[in-house]
Image (cartoon, rainbow, N blue to C red; front, side):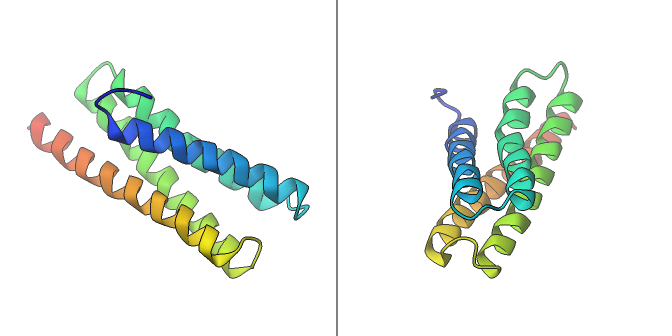
Length: 119
């Protein structure tokens, strides 16, 4: 794990859960369309947040976090769809959704701080 960066830690652990969910959807539910979508957006959250840390400028940092936030919103959508369509159990889906929403809150707070510091 990355010391002193809860966002990166949380998003990496979330990405691992998304990969496991993808595997489950393909093997157990024989679902390939939504599983591809959610694995792309769900793993992109952490990838973009990690890339933001190495941004070349404050604007680059903010841009990468914005992308990460957009991917979080997309992942939230796919999780809600999987729950409503009963591809995953509600309790499991809600647990993942809670993690997604926690990451979303962290990103919003980080973006707010970054934008204030840029001024």
